[in-house]
Length: 200
Image (cartoon, rainbow, N blue to C red; front, side, top):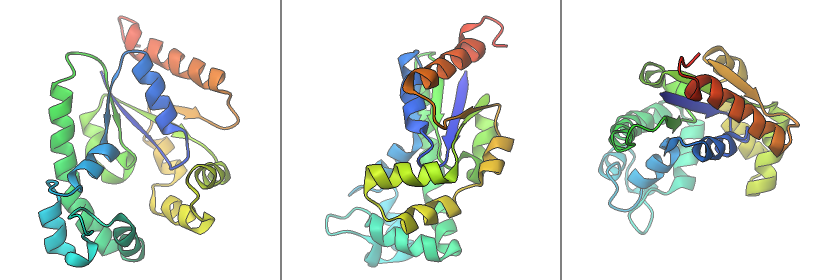
């Protein structure tokens, strides 16, 4: 079973991912892969430097994330160029990690699952963690210290809630749920998708 897990920033997706791991899933975090390949000497850095120049390379040779964020938020073509570099490399590393999962159910944590299109064909089920935008905003501001405008810019660039829900095989609406209630929803989903012999 290959589960594609997605949700907007501040939806609680990472919490759900951790709960799925507790049930026995192998987690492949595409955000973590993206960060790794943009570290100093990372696989993506030569192509990023060639496409965007030394201005986006930090003093240690990795990606200057703040500078790149400024560029892609103001230029959709720059965003597309960056994604064209990162997505194939992320996909290759994700598949390599999946091959090492040893038969365990795999959860691919993919923030841009709906936007990238390619992932839907590579997973058996899509789980969306959803929350109201106001809740997303307050959660991210509280945990990160970002300004509200910066969080809103991220939300605006992500797929809409409606688009994510339309792509989902299941939706967890993580709005005013206690941790116990959220854990119960995750457990029920795990039983339905993974634990039952029919997978029904």
